[in-house]
Amino acid sequence: MKSILIVDDDANAREALRRTLERAGYTVLQACDGNEAIEWFNNHHPDLVIMDLFMPEKEGLETIFDLKREHKDIKIIAISGGWKVGSQNYLEAALELGADDYIAKPFNSETLMTTINKALSASVS
Image (cartoon, rainbow, N blue to C red; front, top):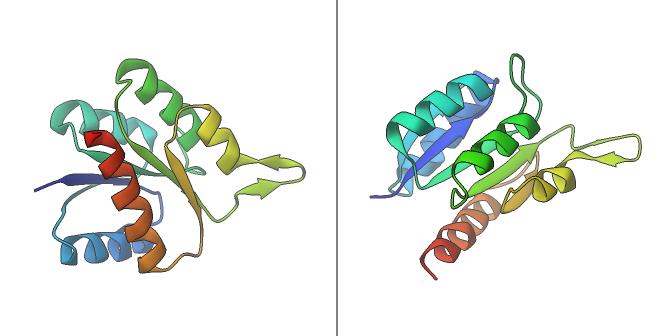
């Protein structure tokens, strides 16, 4: 069974994602910020990380950069509701730092599952 690490400071968002992913048959791990995400990843090596971009302590862009530097093959999907501030598109910046794809919040479960399936199928090719 594939495992997915959800990283989001919003407990309600993590819980909603967890329920959706567990119904789809995934093992789900959860972290509330980038520091916790790195610890979980190093201890459990999930198949995919879903990373919110705006979090306290250690935000998502920095965490994506750090994870990709140490684990080049890690699959990451960036998510954010505040994806654009002024002219800066943070979801596109996440791709530049190594994320495999992104989803702007709010999103539905169909979009989520399509993006996850695409990322995980790319890891076996």
